Length: 520
Ligand code: FAD
Image: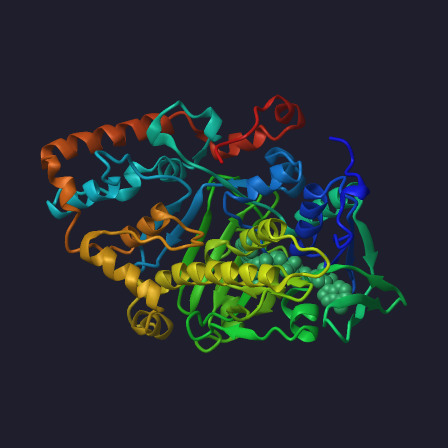
C-alpha cells in the first residue's frame, strides 16, 4: 500500500498520539496503533519510567489475544517462543464446588444443536431422566485438557463437533519487552523519563502536553493513559472518578510467587484452586510456573496468604512473595476530552477469568473504530464509555457467578458470597437458567453460552425443566445421538499429542513450516 498522502488528511486530523506508561497496556496500545495507522502520518510517542516499573503480573489470556498478535504482525509461535509461553485450553476450577471437586471452563463448544434446539437442552433432558453424563464429555477442549494433550485447531480432523480455540500463557515482562522492540522498529518514539506534570488547555480542558523530570515537554493531540492503577492522566488530571465494586467482588490483594517448572509441561491450561479466603492461580510457562493467591484481606492476613501460597507451590520458589493491592471497579469515564484510559488506568477485575489483557485489546479496537479528530466530539467518547461500561459489567457478573455458586460451606468469605445480593442482570440470567435452561446474552458479553454453561454445570446448578422442543426426540434417541458425539470427541482428542511435545514445535524451523494458525 502506498503511504498515506498527508494532503488527504482533514485539517483537524490527529497527527500525534502520546501513550503514557509502558506496561502491557502501554506497549499493546503503541504497537496496535502503529500497525493500524501505518503510513498515515500519525506519530506515536510512548513515555515510561524504568524507575517506576510495571506491575509485572498478567500472564494468562483468552483466545482473542491471538487476533491481537495477528493484527500487529506476530505469529503465535513467535510470541510463545519469545515469552517462554505455553498454550491454554481453558481454566480448571478446583475446589470451587466443594473440597475435592473440579470442573473445566473450555475455550470451545459443547456438542451439536439439532432441529434448532441447542445441545445443552438435550443434555438437560437426559440429566432430568437420570441418564446424564458429565458435560465435559461433549467438549473436545475439555477432553484434551483431561489428557494433558494439545493440538492446533488446524491439526484437528474436520469434524463439526471439534470446534475449539486456544489462548496463551506468557511471561508478562518478556511480552512487554517483545512489544517494546517491535514498537520501536515500527517507529514508536520511546522516552524513558518520569512524567511530573500534565498540562491542559484552559478553554477545552484537553491535555496539551506532558512534562518530565528530565525537562522534556511532550505535546500531542490524543493521550492514552496507561500509567497503571495510579491513572495519572485520566484520574488525577481529567478527574474521572472511580466506580467501586469491592462490595460485589471483595478480593483486594494478591501475593504472587513463581516456582520452578518441575515435571515438565503437562497441563495446557490455567488452574484456579479455591482456598479459604480466595483462590490460587497456577500458570505454566516453559521456564517457570506462575503462582498467586488472590484473597480478601478482611478474611486472611498477608502473612497467612503468603504462607498458604508457599505451602502449595509445586516446585522450588524462584522469588520472594510479591504483594499486590487492588480493588475491583473502573473509571466512570474511560474516555474524557482527548484522554483515554487503557489497562489498569481504566479499571480492574480480578484475574479469575484472565480478562484484563482482553479489555486492553477491546479498548484499542473500540478506539480505532471511534477514532476522533482533534476536536474529539464528545459523542465518540460517550459511545466508548457506554460500550466499555457494559463490557466491564458483563465480565463482573460472570466473575460474581463463580463466587455466588460456590459450595464451600463454613468459610466466612464463601458463605458471605453465596448470600450476597446479585446485580440485576445476573439475577435475571440465573432465574431464566433455573426455570428452563435458558441462556441469556446481553450486549457486550465477553463470555458466550458455552462459558456460562460450563459454570452452571460445574457448580451443579440444574434447571427445573428443559426446553419442550427437545422432546421431539425420545430419551433413547437422544442417548444414541449424544453417545455418537462423545465418541467423535474422543476420536478427535486422540489426534492431540502430549502437551510437552507441542513445545518442540516452537523450534524456529518448525515455526517457519507451520501453517497459519487456528480458528478465530
Ligand atoms: P502497569 O504494568 O502498572 O504499567 C504502568 C506503566 O506506567 C509503567 O510502565 C510505569 O513505568 C508507567 N508510569 C506510571 N507512572 C509514571 C510516571 N509518572 N512517569 C512515567 N511512567 C509512569 N491480566 C490478564 O489478562 N491475565 C492475568 O492472568 C492477569 N493476572 C493478574 C494478576 C494480578 C494479581 C493483577 C493485579 C493483575 C493481573 N492482570 C492479569 C492484569 C494485568 O497485569 C494488567 O492488565 C496488565 O499488566 C496491564 O498493566 P498496565 O500496563 O495497565 O499497568
